[in-house]
Picture 1: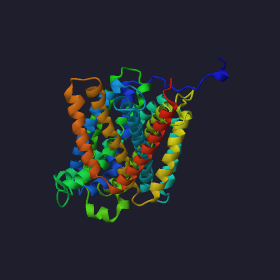
Picture 2: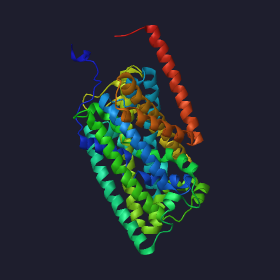
Picture 3: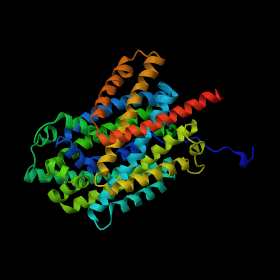
Picture 4: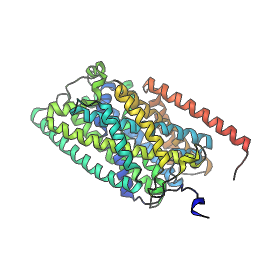
Length: 451
């Protein structure tokens, strides 16, 4: 076969270690992830931000267990798409991949929007959308360089963001020690002005977005150098580290917050910068600026990881004939799915710039991201039951039946109480995906079985 006849490469090089996978996951999650959505969670939960994170952590822990089971059994880059295809059916797999794409298309948009807000918070003369667009373009160049380059950049960003966050928290704790809290110590759990279980459950869909990233590790399954179980270990490690960091920073900053949830509800545009505003007014302005710079860089690279994850889902679905085959091609030099990355980047750029213009763009995007992820998680848990309990007759009832069944119930409740506009967007996305799956299924039946 001549060089001109060589088929395009569609496989990814195995080069990522456990440490690099954890780094990828942490940079996608973002050690300071609550910074950008603190105001939204504080307002929507009526001040019970820590109670929201407790529920969200439980949900993510159940989900991590199911991811660990499926990633070891089906070590493919398609994540939930691959798992639902193996555990349920090909059409269910398509729907799972379609819904998780809503997650991976919007997570980078939210992350880049955080960058825009962070830089705009201390350079207000430059609009947030301009910083947002610049972040998309710069990190895309890194993304196209391949998995190893992404991993190296991720490690550096995580270390820098954790260091800055530590300095901010030390400063905040010093203020609490000398001046005392602005709210009661129980307020982050009980709320400001009263406890509302409905408000807490309704806000979990937003808080869950802060954890999204540990699941993206599964999309690097075909690039992992170790055993299949390495992916599950990396996911669980990321979840534990992120949970501790989220609890600590949200609790400390809320104790210094003077604004009430009602104040933010009256001015939704102030939610995105509340964390910075508290640090600036209650601790010191230069720390707020340092945090803004660190968060801008961290959020940009979190967006980069989202683009990488989304492109690999598109690549896998294209390789299976669910999307045009051209999107399955991998660059010979970079080892990266070039066309798939370009597609996901273009969609992200449009959505992120649009959201930067809208006063409630952050709230809507954050809620919609979670609807896509939570819907995919529902199919993930169903896949565990289908793959292990039904198809393989597993006797491990705890992890293969009880855990996924409990997670399905909890996720269903959270989805019901989620943002109504986000539910409408998610439902519309689901209808389009179901229609596409039906067309593909009909065409497959007409063509008959293929080799």
